Length: 226
Image 1 (cartoon, rainbow, N blue to C red):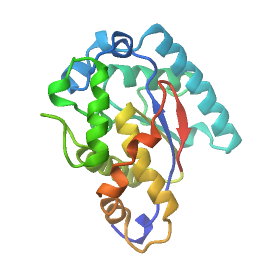
Image 2 (cartoon, rainbow, N blue to C red):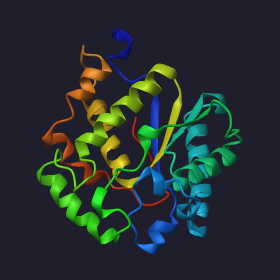
Image 3 (cartoon, helix red, strand yellow):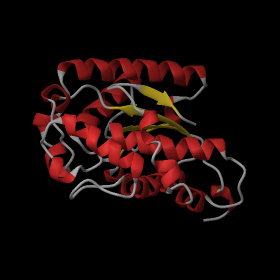
Image 4 (cartoon, rainbow, N blue to C red):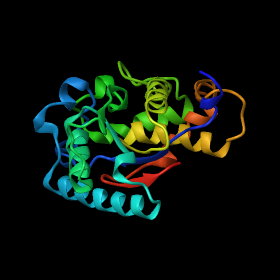
């Protein structure tokens, strides 16, 4: 990929979607088929959280002298994330149909397999398994390592497409925890002659991925990583 990719070329913020109908119903909605249904979009509170996140993001951009033309919003195709990203774009004055907003299937929710549409109390069982072995998936679902691999593809896409931008990643709890684990480790270990792809691959190991829960986000929470 060349020397220019030995370090990240953009600044990254993450935003967990606003409070959703699945959150309020206490349901795990993680499949692409279910997650893109309108009935599983944002709750009323979630819409307000998305607007507030947009206002906060706008303030942060102004503080760091990022003009709107240098902002990119990349989001999961799920209803709850698409609606969140749309609200943020509206606050910023960005057309949601423009090239500044990009739907990326790689940013989708972690798939929890046999736990689909069951109580979200089941998450605790998965996270306990993650801590022991992040390469072991829940039955029929994705492991932490599986999600990390597709997030690596997402990062390579954004790093190839954009340079010097403020990139907002609008996604889901587990997905963003895993993404932050990768980005934080890249940030803490900047000096390397390896390209970004090789550096990220080197992070898809037990000692790194098993720690993803420490990066948990509340619904509607915005956080700058790099």
